[in-house]
Structures are given as structure tokens and as C-alpha cells.
Amino acid sequence: MSYAPIPRGSVIGILGNGHFGRLLAQAAREMGYRAWILGPGINSPAGQVADREFDADYLDLTAIEEFAKGSDVITFGCHRIPAKCLEFLGPLKTVRPSPETLLLMGNRLRERTWLQERGFPLPDFVSVRSRAELDDAIDLIGSPSILRSYRPDQDIKRCRKISAGDDLDESWAAMEGEDAILETWVQCEQVLSVACARSVGGETRCFPVCEITYHEDILVAANAPAAIPADIAQKAQAMALQIAQSARTIGILTVQLSVLPDGGLLVDELTPTPHASGQFSMDACSSSQFQHHILAITGRPLPKIDLKEPATTITMLGALWRQDPAPFDALRALPHAHLHLYGKADPSPRREMGHITVLGELTPDICESLRRLALDQTFQPPKPPSPADIVVGRLEQRPFSPFAVILANGLPLAVDEPAALARLRGSFVHQSKEGAVTQFNPDDISAVS
Image: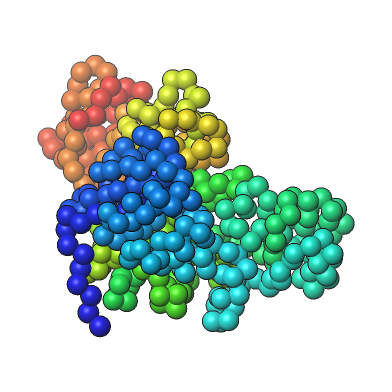
């Protein structure tokens, strides 16, 4: 079956006015589409870049109807949309991914059961709907184990690890009366994330596998490509594509996986929309996850995805805004850095306010600065390289490029080939083409050109 692409100039309606809605709207406009946004609040991150902004709750069915009738296709900048809204939208307009997909992946028990029925690898799990059932579940699953709400968006607030001897009354009280699942605690080596795009006609493309880091239940860092063997990367991508095809989703599907000590993979979470782990693709790939989502939902061909350079992406939370002075100019000054701020007005400490992606192989000092940024939400610029460090770096370049060393006494030394300069016992020895030899210490270097 063939599908005619949605014409450029059409309206893409995006439910969700946060930063994912913003990045989808920007991608839509880059590709010649208009973007309408609906969500509670005016001058929202997404509304700032949209053609029209609806300030409405997701259960305001009058506003939802007006929004839907003016859109040519509807998609999502967030995947926590009330079921009543999804059920109302279905008959009104083409919705991609489908309401059924969001309802499936917005309920942890339903999602886990669906994956299990199709043979995808999972931790052992069981439904828990009362305090009494928790005792039975512990007997079946054992400990340590994880108690989680059916609602994935409640993990930060309600997820509990249960070890032998823990107070089960307290663990169950944390669920605040919601149904939950208990699943085996998995001691994983790494946490991976892989995004794939599936179009209206079933065409698929996969993004590079990245390794992600959580801190206090917030995804704070993603590194692409993940430091894993090629066969594990291929297996992770194949699994993501199989899940996307089985679910018949349209747009971006992100699959989070745990790597076991023996190299096996377990599915941890599915997200049927763009995800924080894939934001590296904006700067590091030939096409971003947001661009591929727009291509997929409008029925256009999906180009091959190439990783141009390795990438490290760090989530910037509101706590960083309290640093004095604000470090944004210093962040932007990092080599090959791309800073993205989301236009949010309230920098509360745990709110995602932006991200930075640094491309290429990182020096140890930049790695340490980014590690502290991710874990502590503070930024100290790496110490600038000394002239001696620059000289050593130039000598190590492949291919070699000629340069000049300027000494403190003003003497210029032209280094035309690596053999003209050597470092011996902490000092440099230079020999000119005419045979003149100059020995100097690192502290004698005033500049490198």
C-alpha cells in the first residue's frame, strides 16, 4: 500500500508545549510545515516557536476539537496524555503515533505484558494491586526487587527498591494507592538507549546506540556511540526495530535497555516519542530524531542516518542557573560545543532547562568538567592548555602541520616537520634546516602560531 505524503505547508498539531514540543516544532518548520501547539500555559517553550499556541488543558475538549480540526496530522511532544483526550482525538483526525500506541506504552503492566507475549527479554515481574498482594509478589519474585507504579512518569516519586528485611508497609505506602508491578532487581553493566524511526509505510531507520547515565532518577548524560562491542550494538538496534514493527508505531520509538554482565540485553522502557537520550542527534548526526519524527509522520522517505562525530550530551537543570556568574558563555566556548536552551522561565533545581552537546574525542580535563556538570550541575571551565601542551599536541597531529614556536626572548623557531623538534628530559631541542640547535624549557615558550 502506498501513502501520499502530507503536503508541505500543512499544519502539524503537537500536543505538549514543553521542550520536546519546541524541538519538534522547529524541525517541522525547517521542513516547510506549520506547527500548532496545545498545552497548559502561554508563551511556553514550544509556543515561542509555533505558528499558533493553544493555552489549554489536555482535557479541555472544546479546545482540543478546534486544535484537531485545524491540524492536518497530530503528534506528541510528550507521551503522558490522558486517555480521555486520546480517545477523543482518534475519530477527529489522523494521529501519529496512534492513541493505542500511547495507551500501551503509558501503562507499565500493559507494556510489559505485551513485550513478554512477543518474546522480548524482560526482568521477571508480577502485578501488585494491594498490600496483601505485595507479600505474595515478594515470595514469587524474591529480593532485591523493584516496586514501580503502572505509570512510568511516576518513577521518580514512587519507584522503590526492596531488599530483604525492608519495611513493606512503607514501600507500599509510597505507591499512594496506585497499582504497581514488582520486578526483579537487575544488576546491569550499562544502560543503553536506541531510537528508531518508523514511517507510515513501515520504512525504518535506526539511530546510533548511546550509553546513558541517570543521577537522582534524572537522565543527565548520553554518550554516542556507546562503548560496547559491535555485536551488542547491532543486537540493540535490531531489537528496537523489531519492537517498532511489532507495535506498528509511526514516528520515533526509543527503547531503553540494560546490559547484563554476560552481554545479554533486557528491555527496560519504551517511549513512543522523541527522548532526552537522543538529543545528541541534533548536532552529531546527519538527521536528528526530531527531523526523522516529522518525516515519518508526514509519510516522507527516511534518509540513512550517519553519526558524523562522537558526541557527549549533558542535561542542564535549573540548579545550574544559580551559579554566579552564569556559565553559558564558558559552556559555548568549549571546543565543538553546541548549547541548546529551551526558553523556560522558571529554573527550579530539577527542571530540564537545556542541554549541551560536545562533539569529537574529549580531552581528560573537558571530560571532568562535563562529568561535574552532569552530576553536580556546576561548571568550571577546563584549564586552558599551556604553550608547551599546544606544542606537544601539534607534534602529535596526523597529518603534521608546520608551526612556529615563539620563545620569551622573541626568537621564532620554525617547526617544518616533527623530526625538527624533540622533547628530551623535560626540555625541547630544536634543529633548524640550517643545522642550528636550540634547547629551551617549556616555561620559555611565550606563544605558538
